[in-house]
Image 1 (cartoon, rainbow, N blue to C red):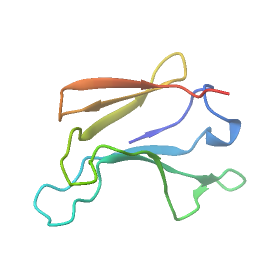
Image 2: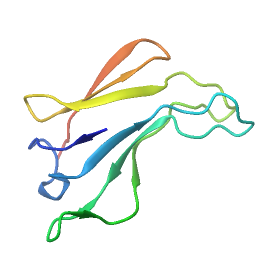
Image 3: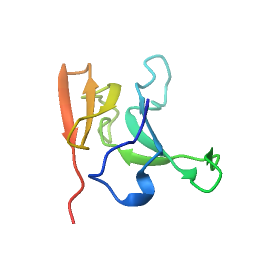
Image 4: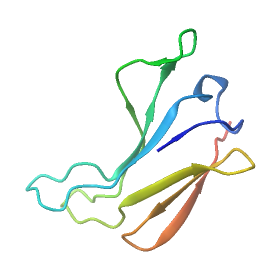
Length: 97
């Protein structure tokens, strides 16, 4: 997980946490396999107590997994980078307006 310090996303994302949920491997119903955002109340610097899905889709409708997010960081240009070990790739995420 990482705190967002960049400027590629809306201003309200600054200081929020982005976390990689690697995913379960030993459950009948798969969980995880996503990147989430943990929003903060920026007036007091505390998490709001919830998270929202940010990047999903690593599990196909029939249950096959094609990616497992692992690590996440903020690049120097403000984009998010995350690795996934299902295919050994690194993804770069920016915000489009």
